[in-house]
Length: 172
Length: 270
Image 1 (tube, chains in turn brown, green):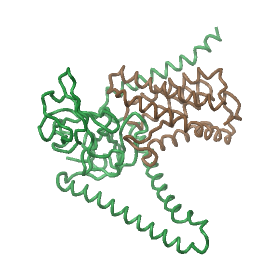
Image 2 (spheres, helix red, strand yellow; image 1 turned 90 degrees about the vertical axis):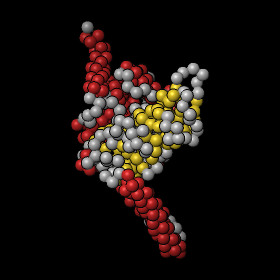
Image 3 (tube, chains in turn brown, green; image 1 turned 180 degrees about the vertical axis):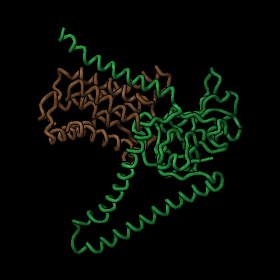
Image 4 (cartoon, one colour; image 1 turned 135 degrees about the horizontal axis):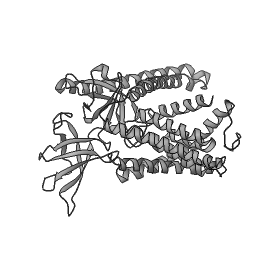
């Protein structure tokens, strides 16, 4: 059941992210919803699930993206590890904590991506684009993260799936 | 000892997954011109869903406008309101059809003029990564498309095809950082390379410092590289920055096509 909820969440996130009805290329708004799924898994579930599903989520994004295969897989695995490790002794049910970890995840994801681009000498991003994308992503993630986490939390509860970390009755 | 092993397990798994991701990246970087089976499969699975959702959303929006909005209107006004709504809906529909017909006529006129083999395609998806500028179109290798074909509208150049699935293709837009087009300033024939700079602008690089360039100059494809047809409009010069030191001008180019509003495009099959 857990896998069904996870796969549905990733599929919905990818459909939303590739939809010209919701987002546009160019100066339009863009947000990485799959990153929020990874953050949710890392906050509420054990390290094995967080890392493996973080990797798989990144890989499925890579498959649909024009970027190099493995780039998102790497950045999302690393993000899952950092978020999971730092949130071990934190009260993850708090909305503020969840939002803070989402911001941290955007930063780690961006940084990992930039490092890979530099190491592999791939066409790098202009600083202005890095900055504007990062700010836009962070702000949109802060706005959307509570809804995404609430949706995932409800789906898990509906499927009688108890998270590995924290209580299943969140404050959201 | 057991506790120590338990402690290192997450790090070992992390390293394994990172190595796997790096191996995929290396493999993919070396085989950059190929489209992997996974990518073809991914496009073929998600894009039909995307099209189905778009069509469902359009129908639902039609139902919403035509019926649900009227549910709570006073009974006396229902008939008239519905009539007005229906007529307005029809008018909007006709206007939309007219605008679409105009766009298609311009595209087809452009095709008939220079590219009789060109294929008209619809934009059905965008890149899931916020870091790249790419769109997916609903024509692929089954429609005799292949990689590295220029994509344009009647207004000018949009980009080039980079990945191919049987019924879908991905198009790298001019504004993406990985895009590079050999270009000319139409007025003075000064040469440079147009690369993606920001989400709205491109940059014309390697233009000789002594070349005559002014804001408003037209930038066209030079035809070198045999991907982009010679003379195809790229955009106009938006700004020229001259550095006190250096060999080249810094030129910003505004693309002729509004890439955020793409609906139909023309794949310029040679």
